[in-house]
Amino acid sequence: MADLLPVHGLLDGGTVKHYFRSSDVYGETGGVGAKVGIRKIKEADLTGSEEIIPVKELLRTGAMLRIGIRYKNSANKRKSAKLLISNGSVAKLFGTVPADKLEGTPYKIGTATAKGNIVNIGMIRRAFTY
Image (cartoon, rainbow, N blue to C red; front, side):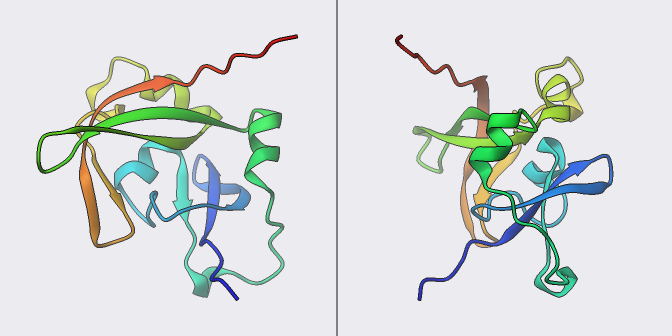
C-alpha cells in the first residue's frame, strides 16, 4: 500500500482549526508554513481522533486558498508551483510588511530537497463557462 501524505494543521492563531493531508512543503516550524498559516503535525502528536478533512472541502468553504508561486532554482531558472494558504494569512502575504511576505523565503520539499527561493506570488484565476 502506498504511504499516506503527512497530516497538516490549518492554524487559527496558534491553535489547529482543521486537519488535512498534503505534501511536505510547509514544515513543522518556520519557513513557508509559518507565513501561510499551515503546520505539519508530528506523528507523535496525533491522537488518532483527529478528523481529516479533504483539501477540496476546505477550498470550497473558503477556509483555505490556493496561490501560485514562482521560484528560481540553483541554475537561476524560473519554476512555478502552487501552495495552500490559510484564509487568515492572505492579508499578510499580499501586505506591505516585508517580514510577512513570501518573497525571498526558501521553497523546499521535505527536509532535504531545496528547490530554490520564492521570487513572486499571485492568486490563481479559474475560468468557468456557463
